[in-house]
Amino acid sequence: MRKGTSLLSGVRKHSVLWLMLLPVLIYFIIFSYLPMCGIWLAFTRFDFRLGFFKSPFVGFDNFRYLFESGIFFRLLRNTVLYNAAFILCGNMMQVICALFLNDLGNRRFVKTSQSLIFLPYFISYVLVGLFSYALFNVDNGLINTTLRSLGLEEYNFYLEPNAWPFIIVAVQVWKGLGYGSVVYLSVMSSFDQEIYESARIDGATKWQQVRKLTLPMVKPTFMLLVMFNLGSILKGQFQLFYQLVGNNGLLFNTTDIIDTYVYRSLTVNFDIGMGSAAGVFQSVFGCALVLIVNALVRRHDKDLALF
Image (cartoon, rainbow, N blue to C red; front, side, top):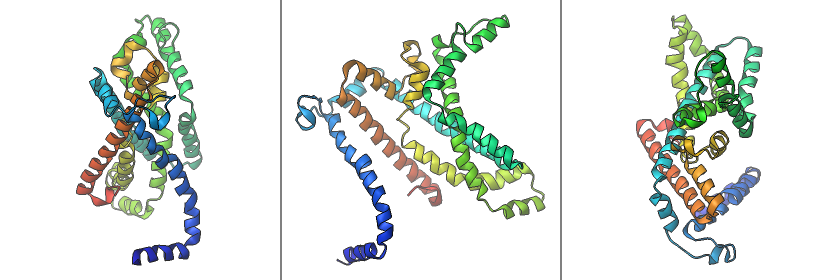
């Protein structure tokens, strides 16, 4: 009773704040919690004629199909490694970019640079796919045209699967560089400048200021963003892979991820149960990974942990 009474009294006391919170609660209930009922589809062989509740229950058959397929562990490897590269390379490049922008004295130049770096974030993946084709096409792509004009041998990117991990990671880092650098730059701009002034008076070089002051103060934000991204480590950038690679089976060994494989399976078989099973596996794996990493980080430094 005491807890219930205190909650009701808190609602009455802060009614305006609770009213402001209400739209957020409604949003998460409708778009985050109610869709969780769809997990049931992962354990059924969904039939449109029978509907959501009357479709035959098949237990873990959909999951068994995923794990028993000969290419599942290749898909798992590609998905995890690509997302790990996206997270680590992306965040490191964003920090480096923010460091350079933060040290520039010309504010007008900084704002112009931010706008130009931010621009790729708004470009559609369809256009990114067109840009990549214009670069790597063996017939009239920019790279091969340049190679031929220099008398060098052309390189057919669309027949070489080993080249695409570097291309895909580079494109993703380039596309997200502006957004992430703005986040880190806003963090750096909030640092107390008196600390840097004291370091300069003591004779600290620019590199020493970065290494001893800026990077340690950026570390909590870096760890927070990394742990947030770990939750979706099995949810690949479907648009990126599909627009760059498409259905080119010659590149699947190094470019096929769970999302693209499920998409191709659904377009052929339209198996909603199998697609739901893949989604449930991705969510459970991501949640477990976040909990494990958070526990390890909390053991090392409680201030850097999410909870």
